Image 1 (tube, rainbow, N blue to C red):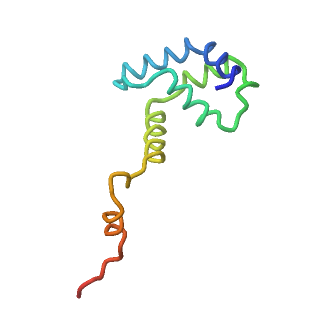
Image 2 (cartoon, rainbow, N blue to C red):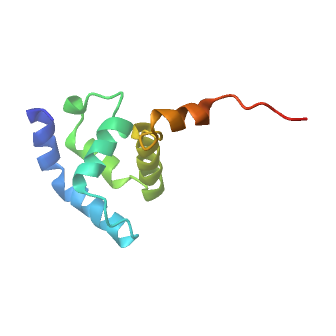
Image 3 (cartoon, one colour):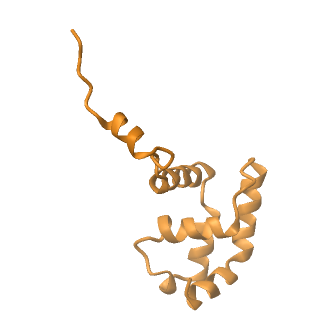
Length: 104
């Protein structure tokens, strides 16, 4: 993160902590303030210039995050980042991807 983002993050820590505590109350105990901040940067504000946003807009966006939307985002990102075939060697991968002959 750049220094502008670091400053905004520091200014938003009370809102981020509040949202993190809410997630923990709902049972999502692994969520951190950094996770929430990253979600906002990548999802909520992906088409906005955060440096031009007012503090109350940023705080409002953070406090309005729904746990379901956040968890859906994290699951999609986990699937997008994972490599499903890392445990397979080349022979196993070749067998898996080989066309099957149908017997009639």
